[in-house]
Amino acid sequence: MTIDAAVAPLAVADEPLRVRTGPVRSLRRHVVGVVSAAVIAALILIALAAPWIAPYSPTAPAGVALEDPSWQHPFGTDRFGRDVLSRVIYGARVSLGVAVAAVVMGTALGAAAGLASGYVGGRQDRINQLLLDIGLAFPGIVALMVIVAAFGRSLTIATVAIGVTSVPVVMRVVRGSVISEKEALYVEAARALGSTDTRVVLRHILPNISALIIVLASALVPAAILQEATLSFFGFGARPPTASWGADLSKDARLYFEVQPWMALAPGLALSITVLAFNLLGDTLRDVLDPRMRGRR
Image (cartoon, rainbow, N blue to C red; front, side, top):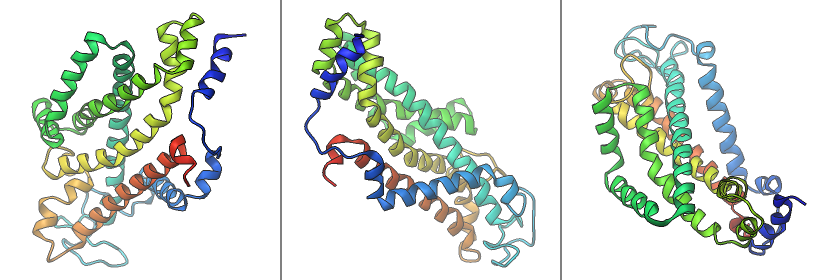
């Protein structure tokens, strides 16, 4: 019998009693989450297929400046004559691409640091906690602007900045879960059977907190989308004339709002729908993947 086979029953026995409900069956009871997932899938497809479905170029004039909505331009045109609908479609590529890349990077770094800090403990853990407290003391948007201003204004720098500022949040949550899990019976059994610390962390503890990490990542995506939009709104993100929801909500949309409200309403509505869909999907994933929530529905 292998070490993993011997430890597995203890891992199950160490869990609290609950009603056994499969994830697929749980999803059927969460219509809002399924609809949100469909909306997100549609947004991703729109972003990927932007060159083929956008009626015009997002950076070249496509008509008269400040044209009202029409069949040719459903959301009108901006002050440069660019089609607003095309810019909204291309803006999905920037917002979703930056957010997903930043969250993947921040989650990977934060989870690795949280696993190491929570399992090892001791002096290194106390130092990490001090650094975490210092990092979390700064307002997120201020830290983002400082990083972008120091290293240059670009989408790459904005992506790295958003990812770096999300590391402390992920690290703190993962660390707390690891501290709780490392005292469980299945971990003690794995150690008694001769498993190395690396094997205990990667083979036993990480799978047991993977659902938490997934839910946490899903909650960070809408926050990252808003952070990218905020950076672009203040001129620290996408460079003109790159299409970005945040940038398109900035100066021109505010100046011409009374003349052409669609310049602000179109990207604002797209941003709101995307953030809402990710938030609702995150709530559903929490209900489905968290054993403590699964039996309450």
